[in-house]
Length: 315
Image 1 (cartoon, helix red, strand yellow):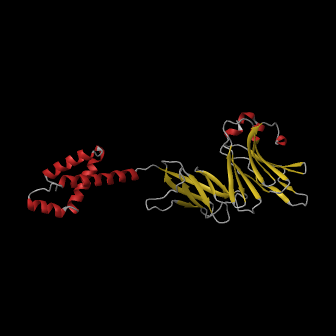
Image 2 (cartoon, rainbow, N blue to C red):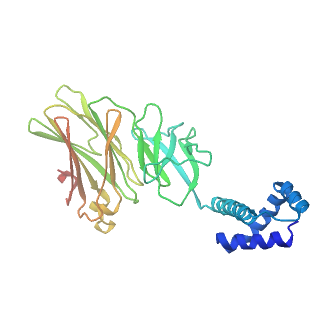
């Protein structure tokens, strides 16, 4: 039990360290446990000598502070808001779910999310390519997705689908178009060689060179949802490639809204790495977006919009 004098010292210590009033009940309860288990010898010595050490107020203050902070941190951790996020990870070229993909969470400063033990918080996709994770919701995260045979993808955290690209040879590019709004966007690739331009799109899904070898192909075509539309092409000297996005929904119905409101983004890969992620500016007008060009294997980001009245007018 805590005698009157010790209780008085406790109250003085509480006032001196200015602990939050709402935690005093928890502190007092914890202090009683500490006093009965840790300070038993000290209490016996105190009773035997019938006097209190001059340092007791300081000891009590330190003890109260330690217990109080322990309670505060405990309450803070236990009440940290959390969010449950669900993932579906699929191949950008086949749309099949990817099993065993490892997902980690990256903070705004580039730090990896860790648990109380300092271990990295991860999620791993099942045989269907799906995963669920519960993480703190007190800050923004991006996700980093890695697995053997695929290029590492890092994107903003969201519930929904992620599409990862298989690794390629050094001179091969792959553009993966995704979007947020329920609509139909189309990926287009204009290929120009020796003054002749051929266009790759949903009604012309591959282009061959003079030797009959396929140099560009539409891997996936999505008419609804969030995509993806994926185009793969082999960069060559003397050949230029221009990648564009068109809103087929806007061409069919102008009231469907601006292309810039769809959250359209293009992730561009080369070889075994991601070379850029391009997101349309929400201030842009028009139903066609020229994203980038590759000429003589050199990449140039274009990033401008314009309007067309038919798919055949895409540059």
